[in-house]
Figure 1 (cartoon, rainbow, N blue to C red):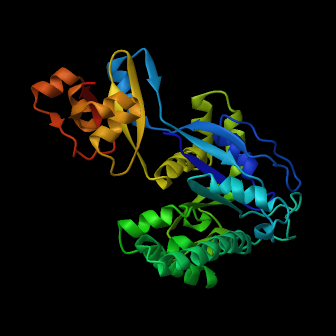
Figure 2: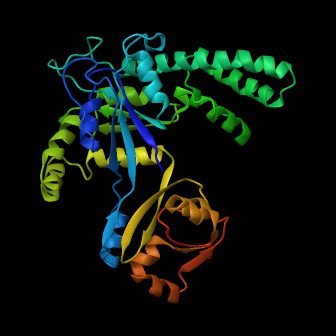
Length: 366
């Protein structure tokens, strides 16, 4: 399952530094606007202690974690919706992502220039929100004009789309993001998904702070929290420069000691990747055995045949049933035969909704 999170923000807020920390890709990082032109793409592992626990029991030849794709997109400026700066390119790149990691500068440093001359994360957020909203409004108005004509001609789907578009237009004109609009049913939600609106994508606001604020945040972070109240969005505090220092350390032990010294249990990168995974609406199931222990990615609500198809399309086409062991039971009983003997192996059909952490084996016939 190939899903992307796009890292966005104004120039010089720490996007590329953060990208370098969390991704296998390496973006240029420098103290001038538009340092990133073409989007940098990298794949990063999703930290999951459960996979290692399974490997400790099964002693497999291979251990394969889940991954998520991260895209570092060029910085945005005012007027991007009209093509200013790298606006058209930025908006095209962000449209291709599934979720947004919006980096906001929440630290003071006179040696790092700010494109607007001062640090104000709420203003920075509003700049990007406005540009995305303006582009969405343009999209909505164009589709609305076409759909109204089709609805007048008797097209029932167009009539339903007109209602959805009307709600989005009303919100966007008021300076609200499309994700703030509550729709009535699955049919409307599908019509909305087909619009690919920029402000309808799930978003996580990443507050980039200095080392002293890495644990508890600061006044800038509190201002952001207040500004996003009522939005369906999350906030994560991270010190990108500290994460860069951690990434340079050679061993796991050194990284743990560093985190303990600054009072953190997990690195910001680990928390960010896990948050991005959740932001995309993803969950993990496992396959575990002597050959391989592997984490597989599905969406929340996916049923057993869909999960089988993640492994191989033939598994979904010829799905017969799934054998399911709950993670806690496997860890407790230490093997599949022991779980089977204890009655902890369930046999599930096509309607079974896969749960996060399920250990699964699929039976199929093609």
